[in-house]
Length: 222
Image (cartoon, one colour):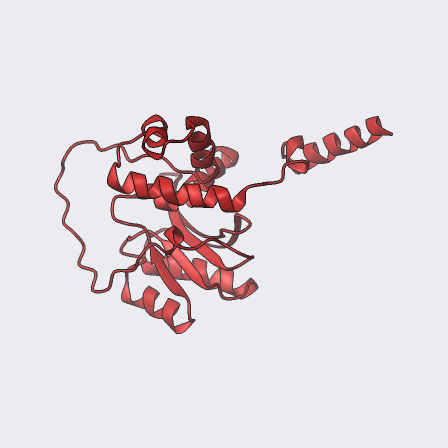
């Protein structure tokens, strides 16, 4: 009987294209991990170049816990490559990172959004996604040949077409997300904007981690 169950799970995992271990894994410490994630982000805000060893020393915890949580949430330290001058964007209203003070409590409580690019027959294609942080499910997407405000707005509208309005939506401070049209849409829907600090890519690591795996699974788009 046990052999039959094992075979069934193995065959099903193969058909679905996922690891057999996914049938057994259940995250046991979501709240504890999220709180540690917030501590790691606060540390990286102060010391952007810290790796997992120095973060562990700073927080006085085992480095294995730091490695595991950073992997779970797709967090990577920011490696500076010189002091190039960049003109600071003029944002009339700055929004805090609400992920540092809130924990996703239920489906569609907190969403996050970002976009990436793909090379396709000599052209660049932009893919924007919206992810539900509670279940790490991509709930909306948009594909365009330009990374304009329209790209990220269409991804949000795609999510809202099938799912309820979230309480808050997190993003980085890219011009697409700080545009008047995008912020007006969020506020009109009653969604609280949340944004990563400047130069802090790890604060939206969930999407970055998804894109890394997505591009590997996708293979060569050409």
